[in-house]
Length: 140
Image (tube, rainbow, N blue to C red; front, side):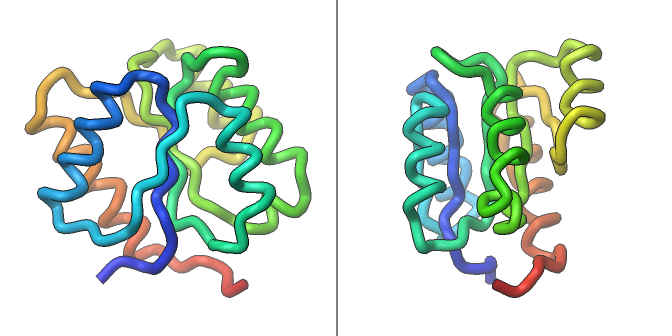
């Protein structure tokens, strides 16, 4: 059984969103999936929701504001940072400099490069979900 709360997916590619949705269903993940195409909408949701999210999966290359900028904005907001929502980049970009920046300039809990086939995507998502399912979170 997973911890309650939605999984937040920020990705502007409809095919990637559908793929993640299909994988979560196949893995029998019962957490609600909430998707956003850009960081602005996601930020508004995070600022206004009373629900404690289980996990944020975020792409790097997004319209308007990058995933890096979005995570830095979360880290700069004491209320959002205090929610301690696990934040994992799931992006096509695997540039070593971007990965280094993600881990050294902000509080990122993971960075996965998007896989090229369904089996690998499923393996990656299962790994992420299983880890955060078992990991202790602060009680709010």
